[in-house]
Length: 81
Image (tube, rainbow, N blue to C red; front, side):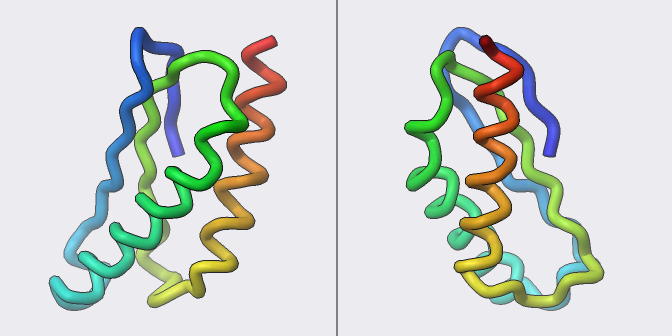
């Protein structure tokens, strides 16, 4: 994940073709977007976020994605202070 302070909250999920077939990539993007939506309240300031998932992990569960983004957003929030 890469991030920078911005004027408004923006995010993108970037997947390569190494993430199997298109339906698998689309499902993974939906899971990441939902996890971002649920954890966005942790950030005090608007940021631009780019999510670059590892292609080695085939289909992580939503709970794993959500927990990881929660941890990362908390780290970003502490660095924003």
